[in-house]
Length: 226
Image (cartoon, rainbow, N blue to C red):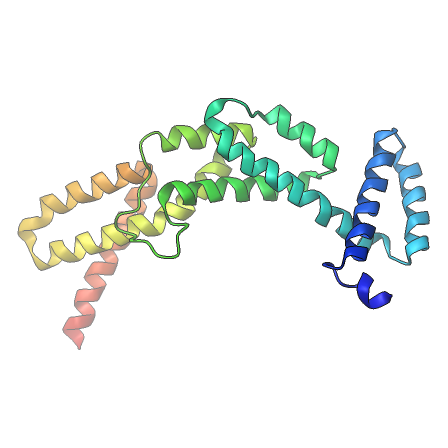
């Protein structure tokens, strides 16, 4: 029935989607040209009354969870040396994961690892205490290489997560210094220590320190006006 085949969770629909996935993979495996593959899949499309776009989406929906499991395993086994970029490439070829999906899934995998190491993946956390454990940046560099991400991609994902954590500390520190000038030196020590905990570059931290200082001064001026 049409209603059952429209439900992604229905056994008949699941069987159909697996058939579509296996058909496409089988045609790829025997070395069909792109033209021949398109022709054969168009025949399948007509048989099931589905557009090629719908078929492609269903094949993708079957393939990506398998590859996601491979990425999860990669994070788990990273330190064992049992995973490599070549192994992931082989898995992608077997599943038919394209370059666009690969990039999105790899960046997501890296971001999840960053969040996990910082401890910000929990429902509740103290932003002032979250920090990378010892060896975390080395681990992230290894993961970056296995996922074949660029240095810029990895840097962006790390800074995206640590920036608000550092900002929290810097803002609180400046507010404390503004309230008690005798604590100015201690504040700088606190900020420097936080920078090291979060693995922030001098360039990035300097920019955020300036922002935090402006915010602290702005807060005082705002109170004065009121």
